[in-house]
Length: 137
Image 1 (cartoon, rainbow, N blue to C red):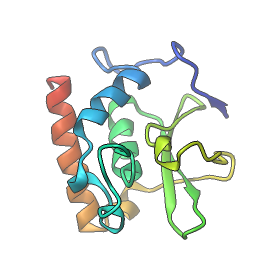
Image 2: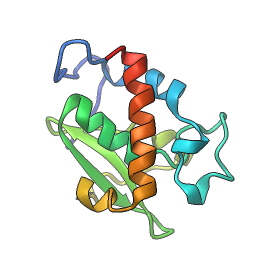
Image 3: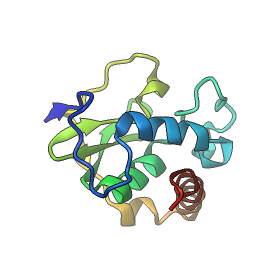
């Protein structure tokens, strides 16, 4: 795998922003309600990517294609990110405050498995609604 470099992103559809533009759009849309419940007490506007990885990665997959992968975390959780055309990009990595993530130690993630949890599917739908409004779809 290689890591995203500015300007190399291939858009799935016309009108879909590149990762930097997507990040700015998601930044306006992430909120406490889209954060995973176990991290909501820690979520704030100074760390808006906290607890947003799965819902963000699956929505990015809808917009630009590719696959969603997950990195096992020390606390037993999974951190989700995107791989498009063998290129890694992670819109929510800032929540780790510069910690180096090992993207090589990852496994493909199943939307069906993640969305078995009703609250996660609801958070995804809320984020999707906000992002699509921003994109004017």
